[in-house]
Length: 235
Image: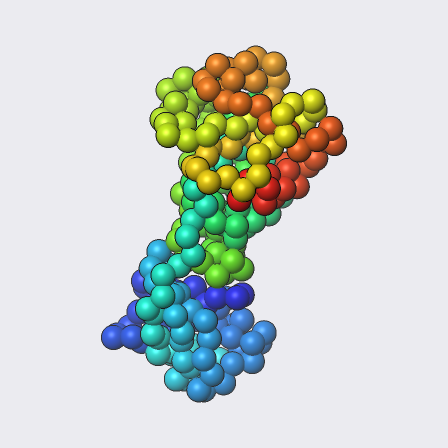
């Protein structure tokens, strides 16, 4: 936990917060925080700054906060990702939140197992939990927005065009395609397929919608590796 991320419900008075549960455990058992210690802190979707420990017990901690800093600038990116395996999804949610992605669309594909859509890890509370962990790691407070899109064709035809307006549209594909651009200076929408890739019909639909194919080379990467490598190269 590189940032003590506070929720509005933690606030108990002017510049005062009260913590319990996971964050209290981290303060006591991992950071060994004592009265008077100062920590990096931030309010969810708000400002960042410091928190000074006023009281810390087994059941709660009270801290005085001073939050005057702006959070890091978000990546100018919309990520469209074919729904990965649940265990991989957890890691991707954390990683994308850490790297500054603020809008993520999880879409269906022919090669996405139907059972993935029944995973408890798609529950709002589970997604929220992973995003919070990613923000804590990346020292950020702005919560990403995650949308579930269970129909590939309706999404591409009805919603996808609005996600491309004023943006460079990129479709990541393994193989002999133009190299992924580096150090973009403009907003972008990036589409990444499932394990095994998009089928030809899906690729055609995405290209017809305005995407340009790009590649990281001939090696076939796991989705979580590809997403991290693409974001690092683009920005």
